[in-house]
Image (cartoon, rainbow, N blue to C red; front, side):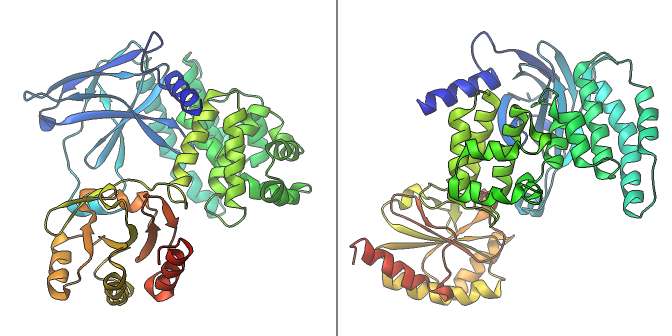
Length: 469
């Protein structure tokens, strides 16, 4: 039943089949991209920023391309093109002649770096009028961004700014535009300016722009300000006169009903729909902190999913659960397919039936080098039951190959170059990082202790508790 409901919600949100589905057509000529496939995405929600594909097309040998994207309303659409992340706004039934930027692929270092960020670029659209949302947003953003950075810098230097006066000047050019999406886009950009310059308190912005206003789930301007205003709201609320009770309400009572009653004591969340969205964001914000019990947060998240009457909230809850559980004990981690130094592909599925001590290392990390000699001893002792898999994050695969030729370590070494996102999938923030995965491919320890931190003893006790030794 749960999967059926989820499928229905995804169907409603994306409109991928049936009579609800609508399309916008994209076409153009881009000789630089001949033979490549253009894949278009949007966000299924702006809290987890989960990407969903809504269309694709192949660029022909002569450079021409034509395809469609599935949209139900004005939708922020983007595509990853080398060093760029191009974007535009698509409306149902319209045609967009895209003018793609000159092709510039990522360097190998950029492709492998978890810190590299593509350059956002609003793609040119050759066939639009001055009333099209793309033209309007571009014209507004140019004016807005010209002032934004300087105003923020002046604010943090203590130089006062008449923000409202500046907003009035910017608004003069666009105030008669009838496009409601564009009107909201401007309104929440101005709210962002007031928020970051501290010219208006968060509570004031909440009351003015969120409390009794429609929730614009697909408007990036609205959602960017929402995420800023309600960032880590549980902790903000805990500092109010009645807020200290939030710790026991969440971690001990684990009651969504009681949590809503408590949050309602602050009038900024007197709207039930807004409160539920803030709860979802706050559950996501807090999951990797130490402020609340993780199991309690998961219980509350499931309660929102089961009880919500709002399809968008059910999808957000499902996306959050997918994100936060993939590294929890008892859940199956993200799959990967990587090559060893001999060019053979290795997946976690191939290792089913054995315990896997998965670790992320580099051959230049002193700590990793210290661990390797201990790992070799553990592997020789437990190799009938335990597979050790090291995913190397060395920028050059040849460095790993040279290292193994010199050391002769005998367990499985993989290079992350075939799937650099594996670093993000396992939330690796330091080297080494360890996980223990069971024979059923479910995580047992996340993170797992390193060899120096007593992994062998923990593994021995695990085997003994399961009657395997």
